[in-house]
Length: 628
Image (cartoon, rainbow, N blue to C red; front, side, top):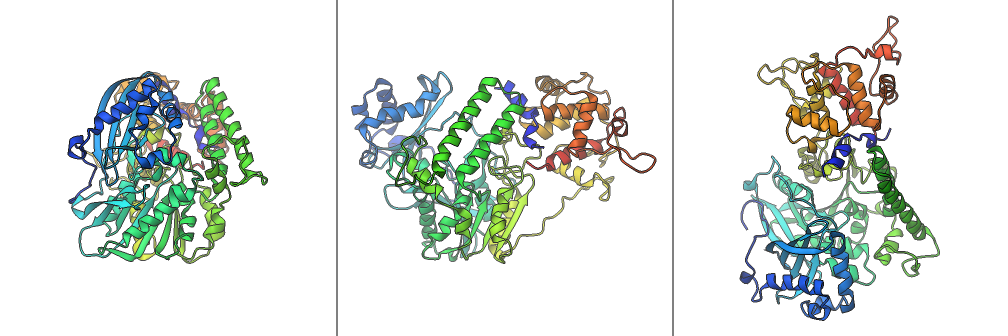
């Protein structure tokens, strides 16, 4: 079974439509950093775009920008950034920040489809050097600092990666105390990422930086080239993965050597997602042998375009499971067929980066054909530095099976280690439920276990032994069939103990409201804004779940089976079908008969008996362990 079949969370979503401490770019008034008013110029850029005054607009740009982006492309740039948002209307807010490379003016406009966010980057002369706008509007981040952060343990220094017209702003997080410290350079995944690798309400790179500071390890992170120099990168001829990622990572490594408080002999590079994919390339191009070791965080071992087909096919399955409208399914299928046709050209030996097919429509073509020649597993076996591969079991962008590709070519190498985290998603945060994509919206932090593993490997070349969660409830039985399930459920806040009595009460029956709370905590925590009966029953109705509406009524095993099967299959089922479905997926077993056998029948399931807390969490635990 594909775990993406769980539709509960997605169904609900369809209806909802420098000193110590962390250093953030300060908000400043434009007059403090420029003789010209950059806010006014930023607004002028938008007005000229709306009025089609491209000559006047071109005069606002820096010579660096003009040397790469022709004037007759300005209209296309504006349309590419604004068209999806509809007509751009009134200005909602202006925020000015400054980093080591640019003064940045972020304008947010009301628009007919969704608010448009546009960040315009100014050089020291007050000329527009580039601009950036996300492809879709994202609500304000609800990111929270991790519990393990201790601002007294580190200082942060603003730095610049590189010295040319593509220089990047960065931050170096240095532990307090006596150095020199080992350093980890963080390398982003695909897309125009910032230095924190911010995604919705997570900031995985920031978490890693402050977490490793506690362990006496420095971290260098920086904005990606396609973020700081967004438009210039798109127009650069023969733009490659080396330009996008590899070269800047090596510039960052060289920068580390300039700081006496950092150990130049202990520099590590950690690449996330696409950064992990090209980690072998970074190591191969480290001609000065400055990198002590490499870390892949959810790095694919196969070619990127093959992975993208898998992502699209998996997305189609998830859309089918949530009962998406036919027009939406048709659009996904159309996109899948488009990608297959495009990538067939990539795999056609008669084409190459020096002989691009006219019908190849993905941009930039040179980048794609250059990367298509890269076999990560072939390059990695030629490297002779220690390597660590970490992968999440609930990653719907880079499946856990990608770890096997690295293992096949590196297994047995004494300097290589692998680890799979069962609950880790692509954002490098844990999620207890079944991943559907909706979990990306939940505020979360990189788990301390991963931080400790990185620290142990960097400092000692080994991974610390995982400590079992300590359950202090007096009736917890470590030898019971439900022990692991209850420990997991308590750890992920799926079920709660009776604190006043210090009891779990694993054999107590569950009421309808209790089972709904547990189910929603597991599969739709973003929708569970509170746990009132009004909220949980509204969510049940929205998800199409059949309930009595009586919160204190004890529910049966059969009723829970039907709730789960409906959530998993996305369709109405009979009691017999529900129980058989759970049998088929090895989620439940029948009670033993007189001969000691456990036949998988409706009768042996005992559907009319009430369901105990231990039984409910064991079922959910087994669901969480199913292979993606």
